[in-house]
Length: 79
Image 1 (cartoon, rainbow, N blue to C red):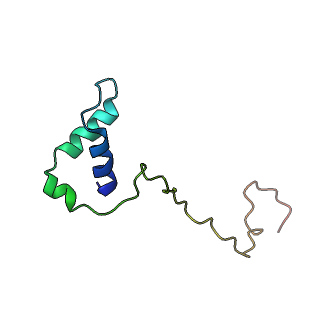
Image 2: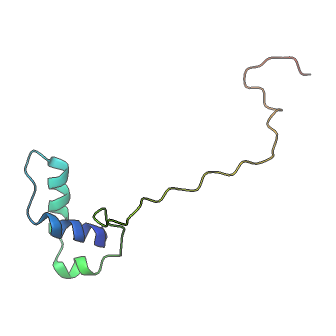
Image 3: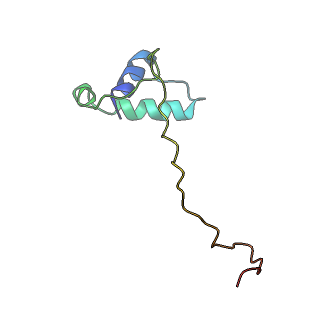
């Protein structure tokens, strides 16, 4: 868990309805920690921050390696 969880936990304020089992499980998990423990968690990006933007991994760089020597379909035109 992170400080982002703490922020959302505090904003929610009370346990979600049983009809939201995943949210209820998350809330119960976060509530199981003492407030002092929650303060020690690392900082995280909160979905409640207006300026928060998800980060994506950089696209893989293409290499100049030639894979022509691999014939996956067995055309048999090479010796």
